Structure formats: C-alpha cells, structure tokens
Length: 402
Figure 1: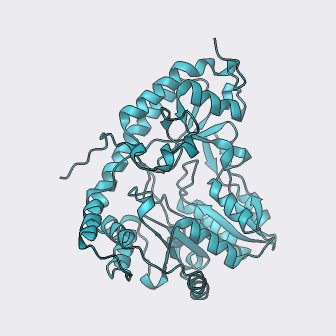
Figure 2 (figure 1 turned 120 degrees about the vertical axis):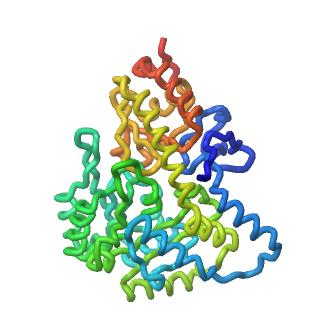
Figure 3 (figure 1 turned 90 degrees about the horizontal axis):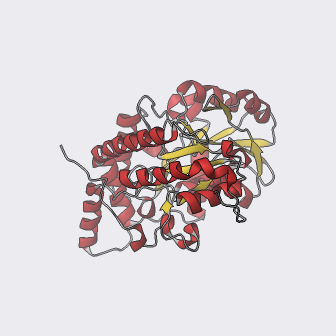
C-alpha cells in the first residue's frame, strides 16, 4: 500500500503563498504559526503532481477543450464516495466556487432583495452579497451544549418573506465544522421549497469529514431538493490544489441551468486551463488513497487539539465533524476580540482567523487550521497552554500578563 509523508517540511514562504504572505501575517509575522488561510501545508497528491509534470513535458499550451474523462471521473467520485448520482449534462465549469456563488446570487435574486445566511459563516459570503447589492438576512446558528444547530423556526419566518429569494448554505459548515445530517438538510430544504427560496450550496469541504460523520450533498436527497438547488463544488480543499484547479456548478433544473450557462457565456467563463484539467482529473480518478491518508492525519491532529484544549478553563473546542478548520471559543478569557487576536499573536505566536470575520456571532472565537505538520501544531498548542492562564491580564495597549 502506498504511503504518504505528511511530516515533510515544505517552505510555504518559497512561493507567494497567501497563508504566509505579509498581507495576511502583517509586519513582523514571519515567525508566526500560520494557521489562518484555509489550505493545507501538505504537497498535492503524487498522482496530481505526475499528471501536471506530464502535461508540462508536452510543451504546447494552446487552447484546450475539457478532457473527455473529467466529468465521468467527477460523477464516479460523487457516486462512489458520497452516493450522489449526477448527470454529466447538469455540470457546468466555473473558475472557482466563489464565482459560482456570485453568479447564482446575481441571476436568481435582484438588487436589494434578501439572501439568507447562517452565521457565523464563511466571510466571503458577506462580500459577495455586499458587492452585488443584496440584503444580508441573518439566520444565526444556535450554539447548544457545544454544538451548533440550525434555527429552523427563524428560517421559516425569514423564508416566508417574499423579499428573501436565496439561502446560501455552507455544507459542511465553515467555520463551525458541522456536517449537516440528512434530517437537518431535509427540514431546511422543505422550508425553502415551501416559500420558493432557492438553495445555493457551497460544498467545497464535502470530502473532508471525520469518523462517524458522513457528508450528504443537499441535492442528493431527491429531485424535490435537487430541483431547488445550485451546488458549487471543487477539489481545491480535498487535494490542496486551490491555486491550480477550477470548480463545478451542478444544476439539475433545466431552465436555471440554461440561464446559468448563458451567463457563463456572457461573462466568457468558458475557457479551460490545461493544468487545472489534468490536476482535477488525476485527483478524482486516482487521488482517493491520498485523501484517505490525509483524513487519518487530520484525525490525529484533531486528537492533539483535544488533548491540549481539554484541561484549559479558558478555551473550549467546538468539536468539528468535518473540514480541517477548528472553531475555538475563547470567550471565558474575557478579552475583547482585538485583544484576543493580539494575545494569540504576541504570546502564543498564532496567526489565525478572527471570529468576528464570520459575523458578530463569532466574537470571542477564532478559526484554527489544523492541516499542518503534527509537530508544528503541537508546538503551537504548547505555547498556548503556557500563556493562556494569563490572558485575562493582557491588553493590546500594553498591559501584559505578569
């Protein structure tokens, strides 16, 4: 059986990686534990690297069509890994998932109309809605006994308002790590169908789930749900190829699909990148063993986080069911959101994503990326443990713990 080395040290700073770039880490951030941007510190699967090298060796990079095997590889992946049978005719190409989300919002809602989000949720959702002049309609998740749940009663009220045209679903959810169950998705889908609210679902993290949890594509629940859904997926997260792959938009409703395809054409979102094509084909066709090994690695890293966080009175781990992102509750430190980030940066050496970026519901939380070398994560956790008991005395204005 092939083995993979997830302990190999790879210098992310040797290329302009966003995670380690000064625009993210800020001045003087060169030595911080870079755990903010949602990608992995692991090399892409060997099968992907080999496929890209073979394509490079060909040496001619003129215009290309989509490889004939790409869509069948994708549909076979979705069927075998997730039990979702997708017609290749329902699949559209896209530059990235955010592009698909933005086009769906612009096509199927109007300026000033409402789009429902479930915060704390991926911050780019807010940017898409603001830049498209849509009303952000909040249906916050409810944190109960350390686990987030959907507020179905609140969703029912919001969906009943005819001004609210779309629900942006995050499945699995970034940043809280919920892998929504079929029962939860059905209940949500029934509410949206009842009130003619279109479900636009970001499912980019679908392949990354932990033991005991299974990703359910919303549109896989049946035609009544698929017909009221636009699903946006990509291998970017699963195989750590975000900068060299594209995405897919799956639309089973023929009228919406034609509308979407026409908009893609109008915006000329129809060119193909040779390296993205071969990378995605190799990933879906032959990358399964690598992904399984990554999931095992992530499980070990999550166990490490549990071990270090459990004894701390000041920090609570919101147990993730999927994604490689961990949502940590620091509210018991009593620090303001700005002081919390400053404390983590100056005392623990962490560069993480501040919780308020995901909405006001995230104040007092941070998002930690655990897709890194085990030893690096352990060192970062040790620094936190050594300093967190003094956090309540910390102030970014200069009052340091004694």
